[in-house]
Image (cartoon, rainbow, N blue to C red):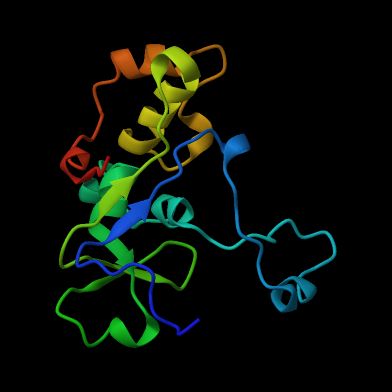
Length: 166
């Protein structure tokens, strides 16, 4: 290999895995980091974009923001970028990482789920992407279906729909 990138694009594309948690994949922390953890620790996975979303700052603008809007408009600040960049960086809650607004929005890719094949998982995917939340466990209360909630929900944040790439 000649170390050339396989794909170059002037438009950022982000894959957002909107499947139910039991069907999502996670990346393990490197062995060196895991070996420093307590033997009983369950913190063995890298922090992903959905984790950063739940740690977004407080405030009306942030509280009404869906995961899809967050992914399309924000990205992590590298350590040296948070002081010398045109866009301000915002500190995430509970961790020392920062995010900043993208100069150009990112297109969002999601798993292709169909209502007649995947049923309630399709509706869950839509709720996960477009309904603002701080804790995913409360998206679909016990005894409810994602389809019922999606049909009756008034707080959907659909600002990110133009950024979907099919």
